[in-house]
Length: 83
Image (cartoon, one colour):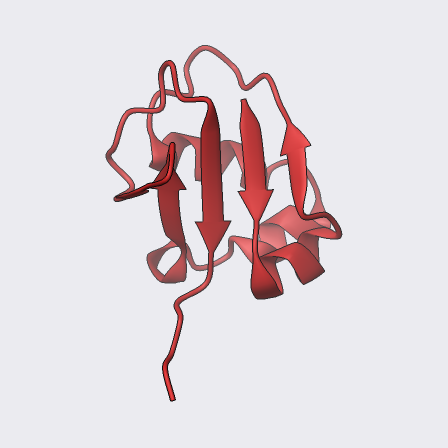
């Protein structure tokens, strides 16, 4: 599955996208965030407060409990402010 990172998440992780094979027990957006946090310091820092992370599964906004089984693309981004 393709994972996309935007804005400050991209900066902290050091990449804008990657293709991953996550473990079979990774079933929801929240599970994926937890797994990503364990992939290294940049990921841990980027996802330290999951309440602030926004996600989209196959280009549809998603909450942490949304299933990711069969998803082709998951995007993560920080909250967006307007001005």
